[in-house]
Length: 457
Image (cartoon, rainbow, N blue to C red; front, top):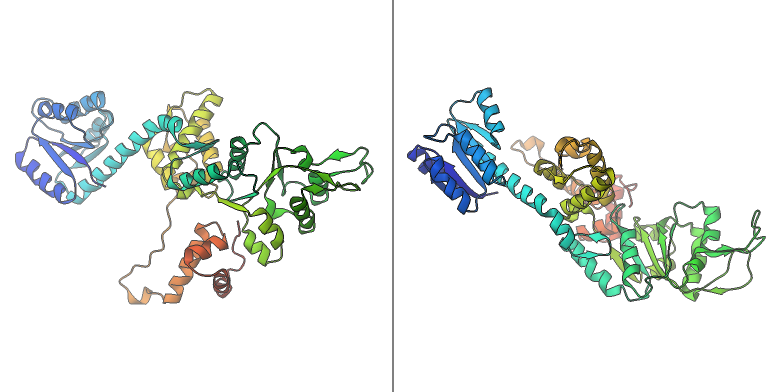
């Protein structure tokens, strides 16, 4: 990461040497030999970081730091001195310095400090503008995001909103599948009519049929009165079948027939009752795998998968992490009646680095927790959960100079296949697509690796 640097030092040769060395590293360096000469440059030019010597004629480096904080608080300052005492470091930090480097200067150490300072400034700028971006960002219903992945979702949802076709929304837990379903309902011609949701995994199997289709009086013990099922309650509107991958296999043929005929027969009833609903199904399961394993009917799969919407995981949405985080800050700070305005740059860096296996739901919980804990106007690293603070991104790296540590090509392939499967949340269909192999080939490899019970979500 490179940027525009203002160097302030009363040693001309030092300025020229650092300008040449940093220029080779991609930095654009302007230098001045006093704080009084540097201040006009600071006011007039767009800078990323200031590097100042501690001892300057006239205004010293600490006083310059105080001026930078007062006039350009967005520009971090790095103080360089030959006097690397603890007292000097504390004084520099109190004056507003971002970092502290001692002489003799090691170029590599200075470059690392500059890169961190530039990244800090850019993250701070992004965080400061998030509230405006949240208000102005492209949305579809309550979905928030400006990433390319979400733009593709918005485009598809916009094109199918007016359609009555059945939609299958898939994605990992916490990616906003139900939010997308509600957005489709609100954008479509059925807006204002019922939106009824049924979580197929939350209702006991013995009650699910009655819940969905209703029952006649006397159909079973305690059925003292007839009751309309959710499909009839949603008549004219939208029926959301959430977590349809968990629907009992025995009930699937009856649902298939109802969707095909647009009529249903309540439990214990004799008459076929017509209904008119748009059906949206969601799941975090790999339905193709369930079909092949005999745990989900293939004909029902094709019936609900007329239009497929895949919700991207949060780790694939880039800067949307901070956009959503700022939105949750506003929401939960208002609920808690706390004056929390945003996220400090170091905390934002942690949020961007984390993989978010729980996706948007996990991010919301993280921010709600941080709002409860923070004692400042901005969320700090210390306010984040341990899992986020301590997270280190994993990489598939095999690099060594010791031939004895090198591994066979088959082992590299095994590690990569399992890494891809992990990164897509265990979705074997998506993993096979990413790897460029057939599902049959992927299954064979997993059997070879002894990983046939890999998580399916």
